[in-house]
Image (cartoon, rainbow, N blue to C red; front, side, top):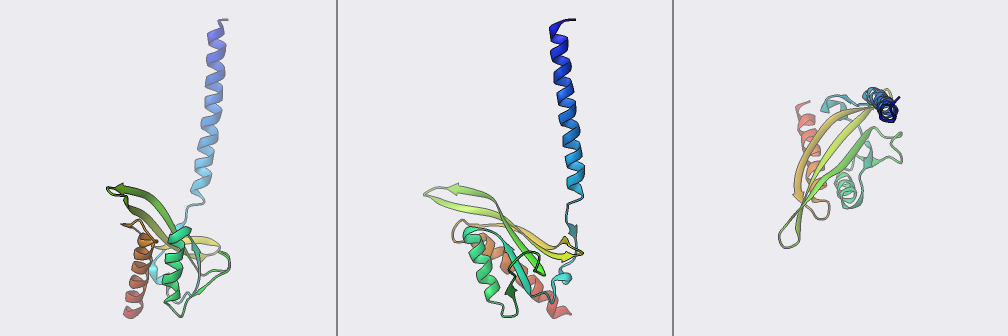
Length: 150
């Protein structure tokens, strides 16, 4: 039997196993996807856990402090709301300036699972958590509007 045939068979066999493992991982990951809920599920919730880092975290925490009815949870498990900010990209433009594109998700916990009740993305100045601050303020604005309609 030619040596090339044996090498090809081994490569196909390994690729097949890797593909199978990848597909099993994708199928398993689909079970972990959050559900989609409605913003009204966030009404009346006051215990918040923030998932963000750096200046974005500081900006989100400062926005929360402006709302006396809200308090920070010590862990995600103890929270009624989870606020997660992710930096998507940073764009440089002339003279050392930057902008940041970010995404924010607000979750409630329902039966131990994360349920997205609000999300948004946007671009702002790439300094001092500007994008995170804009996005969290949009969330509070939308929540306040919904609360007034009640």
